Length: 410
Image 1 (cartoon, rainbow, N blue to C red):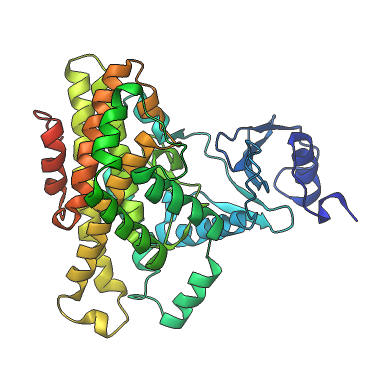
Image 2 (cartoon, rainbow, N blue to C red):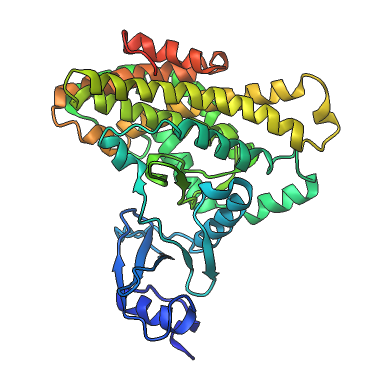
């Protein structure tokens, strides 16, 4: 038996051997280097580079346990799902997705385009860099990848086969627990907040019975509404960006679920960027410009997505009943309601849950951090409790403006 004929967890030296034996990407005799660059908790990410030409590839490799060796076993088939999703999303959304060169089902690794000329969007936003094209590109990506994979557009039997193929129970269970349950109830007992916020969270989040009821509705909607093949973890840490283009990657949580789950995550993380700027940037024109861009990106992402979704609906609809006048507007209204609810849940869980974001944790002044988190939690509650009323970008700005009076969208 050859070394790579049976799965094992590879390290850097193994990856170099693997490339030499299994791939035909680099010229013979190339002097290759390998470095593990992953910063997530589930997978190992290796960059393999030819020192002479600078040509490089990324190899994403699944482990059977988390990187923290938590003992929580995770099905390595998730990398197969992720690889196939990237290929499918590439077919639907073109340049907004990195290229996948091959997937190895034995070693559970995906070989893909190296986006070293891009920055992770969260890092760029923490540097308070604005991207005027972002809303245009992310709204196209969201409309393109979702509607084509729904019953509106697909043969219904084929769609059900796809639901079965991309069922992702291990990672969905993480979403169901950490995003929906623990955000409003701390059922796992692992949530934590800065002390200055603890009483507020207990009163306004954990103690709000109406909020918990709506979160329960959203949770079971996520669990039971296999609407479209979504990315499943679409935040600014899953987007590469430069001055021209976005590249959405890391869809390991992909599954069939409500479309609004992806859209809402994007909105929530734009707001994290906004509060970071409000907390750490000095007063002046640069702060106003970046904060205005964040608000404008929220507004435009919602409005552009809605317009493109309706246009694409008319292009792709195949089901005769879905062609009934008024149905497309009804369908979009449900998506937008899910969007607002998800945005609210994501805001809460990133503040009170175990999976924080650097936009918030990077606010060094604890009192200021608590003040900004409180603002977001109040926005989140409005998003969840009044989600059916948030149908446009202007609706979002009205809710946000209650906590950030005087800020103007650009």
